[in-house]
Image 1 (cartoon, rainbow, N blue to C red):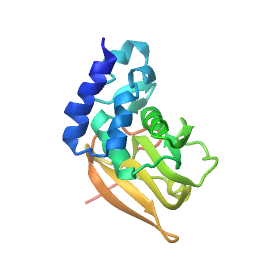
Image 2: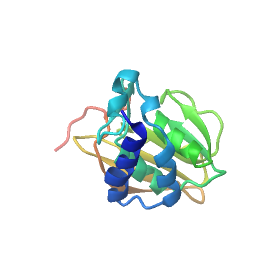
Image 3: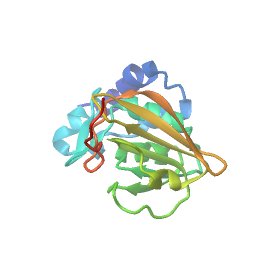
Length: 187
């Protein structure tokens, strides 16, 4: 399989058509291999419009979704980033010149920080407070929050002592183990 051609096709047919217009970001995506981040037997699916399992119970987001999350973060060379269960997001941020700390266990304590950018490629019912607590002043967190069949990509921004959020787009990322919504009763 010609992975370079698949990557170029992914950018043109899935990324740019989804209003991802940041040229530094699309340039980084054009050269960052997804196929090296999944099991060898799944490399053929790395550029498909689908989530791809890279480890048991862990998935890379659809190319469109991760690109839109990254664009919302407005990453800049020289910034610090935390990538939570986000191997592809981490690789793209490194290509863009950010210093990236990878956290493959989303329940682990977060070391280091503060971070300018935090990204997670798995869905959670609600972003844990510990994730926004490690944001630097002006820092941004992008994550998919999902409590039903469709989730919402969310952007959290740290300002003067508080954190604001806004919904970005609908997404159907798989919910990570241990982050499902609590069962309850509702009217």
